Image (tube, rainbow, N blue to C red):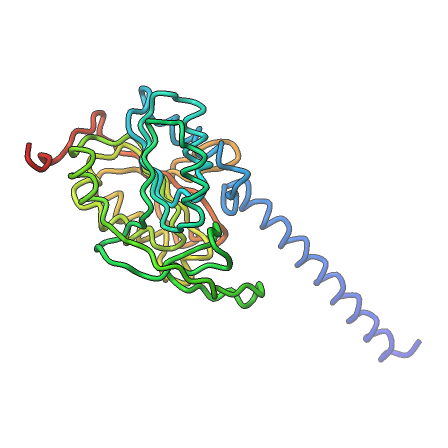
Length: 275
């Protein structure tokens, strides 16, 4: 065997070993991410999400807000655990809201609002890959890399939570707010106004939608920690408190987080309208 042949054989072997190591490292990286909770989300984890959110409360919840309810899986998970909880669900898609209303038709403690939440009231297009899709968003997402087009458009009503809270909840304290609004979480939170300080636990989701709307975990970290909340990430082993924010904590693989008020008691920060 000539020196050139031996060198070529070694080079090919080295490349094969290198590619094998890279593939193994990628698998280990995905496994490590899942163990931390990064990418551990979706319909299969809804029960875990609700259980974890409820675990932060010291007593049974009185008021739960389900924003981006879709067909009500999260609300149903809360209801299965607490029959007396008052649930206010927001779902802008008429197609999904029809199923949501049917599901809770006999439950007098569930209020269905066919509307989206944001930082100002308006009527806007809701984009999706099909009517009532779990992927539906107020932004037309670019998912060409998955061969998914957002060509289904529904015009929907948008309200602010502060307005709803004052008019319909008399500015009461809120135990849990679950946010799953496909990239519009920050705008929804800005529309809370002072109601943010009346909430014990926020649950919010970050994933690929954040690429389309250009939002990051850092934005939530500063918004919440500067208002007296601590941040936890949901893992397969339960919520894990995040002591600090680091750039490596960012992940666009769908992940659930909790913002938990440090205040022992949460009181309404303002008086209701006509109080």
